[in-house]
Amino acid sequence: MKELLRNVDSVYKLLELVAVSRDIDAIFTEVVEELRGLFESERCTLYILDKEKNELYSKVVQKCEVTDLRIPVDNNSIAGYSVLSNKEVIVENAYDDNELKRIDPDLSFGKSIDSRCSFVTKSVLSAPLHYGGEIIGAVQAFNKNGGFLEKDLNAIREFGLILGLMLNNAIVTEELNKYRRASEGADKAKED
Image (tube, rainbow, N blue to C red; front, side, top):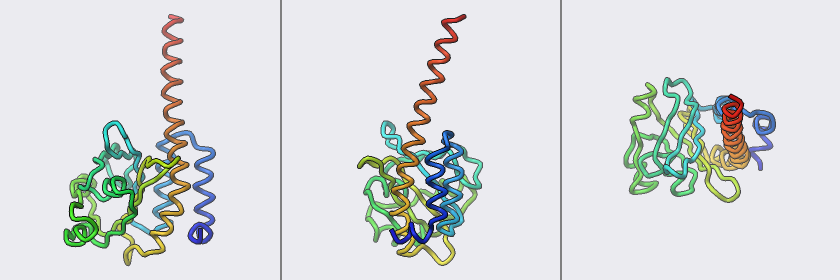
């Protein structure tokens, strides 16, 4: 709760997004920018869990031409590991295999995203996002000057509660919009 109180403006901004925004892409864009500022990081990514495909996807990748990023939920990525293990993780050097093995002997870093986005990941803060007792996504921050600290881990845990609510609302809204568009299309076809 301490981190939420220290970052009241960020809390209000995220709560406002939860309450008023209906466009999942707009939500993602604004949230990752808000988180980037909160964690003083170079970039952030917010992922949704696709349970059927057992992968995480993000529609917004900061400063990258890739518009639909998908990664498997496994130990071959730090976000996948966070979801699979249900753990928050700080990695000081994503390219240091020894550090990754200290976290989990099977953990590795998927370097392909860096090459696709012309980016070099150094430090990573990663956490699963929950809603209703289930994991529904993940959030990551990258390359904080001086590295991520325990206070950042506490903040991501606390903000994760709001992010889980926001992400769930965005997913439900997107599903309702798809249903509405399909229903409108069927009604229009009947009229013709």
